Image (cartoon, rainbow, N blue to C red):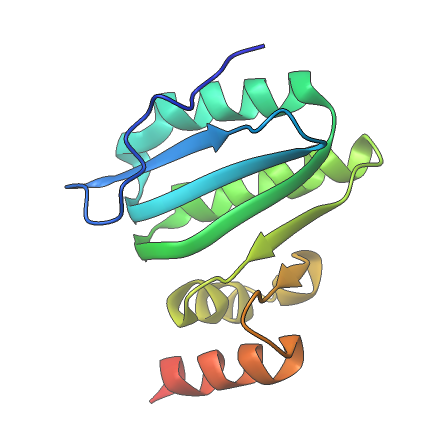
Amino acid sequence: MIDLTDTDTTPGNLGGGLALVTDGGDESLVRMWGDVDATLRDQASEVMSAVIQRGDRVVVDASEVEFIDSSGLAFILQLVNVSDEAGRPVVLRDPPALVLEMFDMLGLSEHVPLDFSRGDETGAAETALEAARR
């Protein structure tokens, strides 16, 4: 198994990043932060490979994402598709409004299961989308 827990996942880290953070439990936690774009292609490949090897529930924490382009969206969708094919649950946790708006514009909102750690999922998603549309 590839352990990427040494990667600097500190919010405020310059640029952006992707990392698989494991705690030995039955969950693969993928953290995304900062600018998630094509410059993270190598990190995305490493994380994807590690997640596939682990074979457990996948949680993608997007709470610290400040910018995301089509490469970042594609990474999330690939994780969802790979996990679905393997019969493993996957959720996108606490995505910011900009991520929700992009999935909404592309008609992909229904394909990405969401999880909001701060309360009601429907209310949180609607509030985030309304803020993004202003």
